[in-house]
Image 1 (cartoon, rainbow, N blue to C red):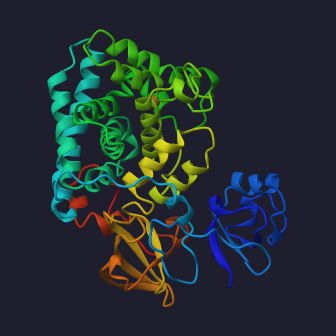
Image 2: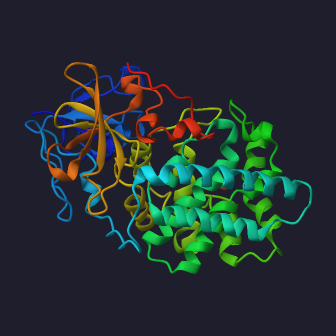
Image 3: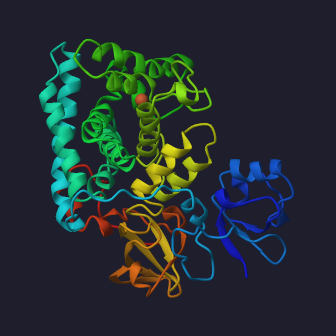
Length: 422
Ligand SMILES: [Fe+2]
């Protein structure tokens, strides 16, 4: 039986029966072939292809599933399963969570007020005024409290931003992600607060970059690129002497460093990069690629996680795995195919296992039409995820309205409503 797998999960010895996507998008003239060596595997991974069909009868099979997560039954092994084996355990929640639907509206309000506070902060800096530090610290605490009430609501809502508000909402989103990641890493509360503040301020240097360059929809010139790359140092100069902790200053300066030394501004490598800066690198990139920008559409949250896992040398792997534990293998909003041949959107993570989230079914694949929406808790075993699907392959738009439960209508930072089906 053929199996559909992510290119991330391919290995030498597998027989590719079919490359998913139009031929023009990849450099292979054959659609079926045996993956005989690492260079060919690297070529597949470097192409724009995200999935392939493999034939286990003609080559080796997909890897065994991990021992610490239950196996999803179904015709195909969930393609993301191999990553589960290396994920850290989830920390015990400090208090019982409220219902996701209860937290969404509150989180939307926190996002709106935080965005306004960040805009004010940028304005104060432009005018040479003093930053309202207490106000910033209060915002971080509010974001932190929201994540404490429910870890999925705010960090997923903060992804839904329009391209023109990106600079401000990105700070709020990275703040939330840093707090979630710091808790996942077991950092004590004062450091969790510092991580949030570092997230909120990490891109403050962009205030010194003209908006025409920040939001340019076409390719940057060399000098424009240099200007953008100066924002970590510009930000550090802005914050220096304003009573921020060294950790906050360090994140501001080093959140674009890469573990292999190819980042900027100082080309630090490995443990030369502080833990906080390594955390910020992951949170920053995740929010950037899951957001709409003037020059490209966002990638889905689940697709982004898988792409990031493939970027060798960019991230600290342990930090990345902790991050995956934090946002999920199937993050809220991910489009998934179920064993029952239906499509569903992930609504909420299961605190015990990343493979069995709560989902909302909305589309029948066999009938090729929308069906009555139904909440299904995959922990019940009545259905299971067999794979991820890409929104663009189905022509769906604005699937956010399915998981935001109407909050989108009141939330000023959402993309236009009305989901459309193919
Ligand atoms: Fe940055």
